[in-house]
Amino acid sequence: MMEVAAGPWTEVFEGSERNGESLGSSTLTLAPLVADSPSIRRSQPIFINSNRSKGVESFSSSVPSIPNPFPELSKSPVLISSLPPQTSDKHLIKVYGEDSHSRSVWVSRGATAREVCHMLVQTAHCTDEENWALLEVHPVLGLERCLEDHEVVLEVQATWSLKGDTRFVFCKNYAKYEFFRKPMLFFPECMISDSADVSKGMTSSELIQQNLLKSGACPEIQGFLHVKEASRKAWKKVYFFLRRSGLYCSTKGSSKEPRHLQYVADLDDLNVYAVVNGRKLYGAPADFTFCIKPSKNPVRTQDLKILCAENEQTRTCWTSAFRLFKYGKQLQCNYQLSKSAPRSLEGSKLPDGKSKSEASLVAMDFSGKAGGRVIQNPTEAQSAEREEGQAWRRREALRCSLPNLNSGARPSSIHKSQPWFHGGVSRKEAQRLMEKQGLVDGMFLIRESQQHAQCFVLELCYKLKARHYLVIACEDSGRKYFTMDDGLTLFIDLLQLVEFHQINKGILPVCLKHPCVCVAL
Image (cartoon, rainbow, N blue to C red; front, side, top):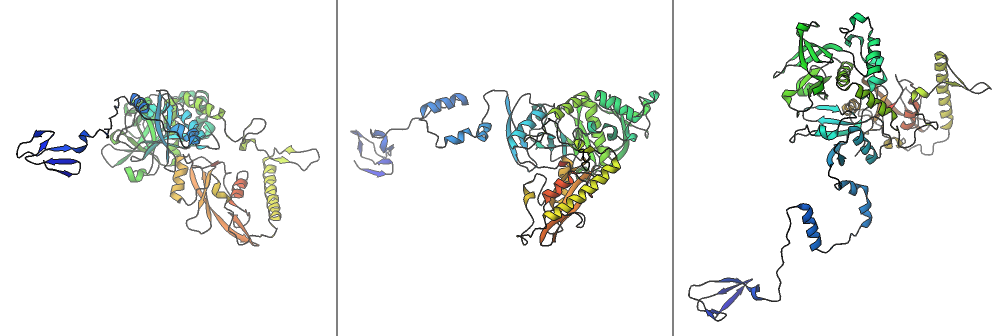
């Protein structure tokens, strides 16, 4: 018998024998060499059950446990939050920040937008809990809307298409309840319809007071809007009426006669969205575009009713009226809850429990011997404000008159750690960020100037428009300063500039109130 070993196999040629048995001619047999070796044991397969939970138990019982070399990491809140909860009613959602980074959080089946925002505030270590909102964003279609505080997040997510790129975005929204803060000035006279109250002889202010303040309802709204015609790129100017029964349009000018009114949509079954970049996406005649769509259906282009207003104020009034007609008293309850919520997580309340606000600041005169007195006369209060500003400049000049040891150093960079500073973002990006967080008076941010070296730009919102103020870096007596009024008022850094204009208007039309922030999740 002749055998030739080749790897793990044995070749047996003709005329050979194996274990005393003769092999016939022209026979070739391949057999493993380790088949008869008693010293080598085969590895046995481990049975894995189709049920994942049981499979994990059987697998963990069949292999020895490995000790954790880093036991301190098991107490990290990030690791704990990434694990699925014990209860089965928890669901995982993904929320994006304005820096395009996302965070996955576990929420209960009935979690509302207010509860999710509170959870994200705690997770992201935000400095305050006020004016945070959850946005529903459709990037491809350019649609976005702010979820109401009482809306259930999972119910909103259930209406999304599985193939779409719809997402939740966590950001500030200062304009969510602006119509409750300034009800008498929110809706223009020309937009309030008097068709239902003409016999009562009520003025527009009385209608607002009766409907919006007392019952949370909205008066009937009317006006011209541009509407995109179905299956066409053309836009048509149509007169619309928004009533409790729904949205109507007039087929004959601005006629209110029933035979000229055409039913457009039911308010209980729709959501209103702001349209971003409506000129490019839909060929809108202006940038103030919004749309309405059925609330329980996935977003499809053929289901969108795209409208365009003449200005930002008109668009804001129409979108707010849609919300008021749909939710009514519920929005007023949400507003009351938002006011009762804690404003700050770092103790920004006064000792008596009152919050700091511009309304609590009064002009005082401490020149007398009997103590201070409140200045009631507005003219005298303005004069006192000017005198205080001049005294502040003299004190600051005296404080900064000491020799500057770092005369060749660059200006202070303390502003880089402030939430209102946004670095080198462009003018367009800054305006887009302010629009997303609500165009309310006093909202501001500071960014680096793209045209002037070592200068900055203060972006301030006033009357629904973003205004731009150049902050110039200058040098006086070897010291670095910043100014916005050609050197009349000097500031040693941007933080001092912001703090000064939070209580003094200066050359600005309104004091700085609401910082435009961008929180990373």
